[in-house]
Every structure is written in structure tokens, then in C-alpha cells.
Length: 80
Image 1 (cartoon, rainbow, N blue to C red):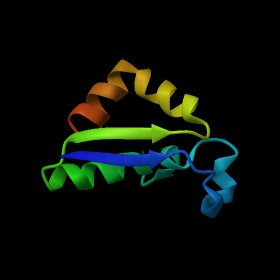
Image 2: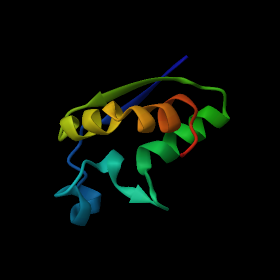
Image 3: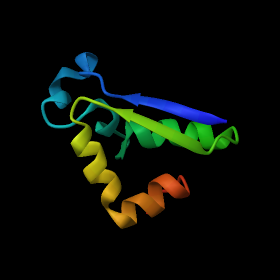
Image 4: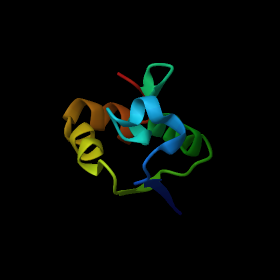
């Protein structure tokens, strides 16, 4: 089953950070919010993700293009 992660809003609830980065990239505990969400879904056996980006989506794409980040965060769910 695919998990759709909407990542295109303005992040109005986190106004201090949204000027710098999109909401899924705002850090909590040293990791992006999207990482925490993905780890939660992985714990339940869901591992096929579709990220729907919009607002500042280029920053999310840039983050995912980093080979080390892609391998450590998105393929295994573990931080490097």
C-alpha cells in the first residue's frame, strides 16, 4: 500500500520556520518532520511513499538529491 505524504502547504502553524524551509523539512529532535512521519509508517510495515510537494518543493527535492541523505533517511528510515 502506498503512503501519500502531502508536502505542499504553506506551513502556517510554524510561521518562524516556514520562511526558511517547507514544513516537512522543519526539524524536531534534530531530524525533519517528514523523517519522523516516515519512521512511524515504516514501523507499521508501510514502505512505499509518494511525496506530493508544492510550496518550496524544490527544497525538498534538493534535500532528497543528497545521495547520503536519500540512502540513510528514505530507503532505510535510519539517520546516518
